[in-house]
Image (cartoon, rainbow, N blue to C red):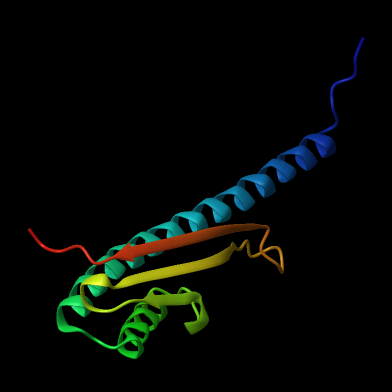
Length: 125
């Protein structure tokens, strides 16, 4: 006959599964937070490109607006990651960045996600 697992072994297995559940929870939470912030940044980029093209804003002002919004959303985006091409009705903004999804137990992110946006001026109908 097989022996039943000892209470200590059962406790160890339970602690292991609780640890796995906590890590998964933090990964999911951070992934959702980052994805929602990226979605909001994408919507803001569409707004900025339309306003900046209409008002013929210089690239310096556009870059400052994007960086301020990224800071507001707690996204570590740097000036070099923003590419502004053209002006007026030919304005295009491109943004590429990668974020680590963190879990408090680990020092370094165990998963990275790359985000890319390319938004061009869309003339209103």
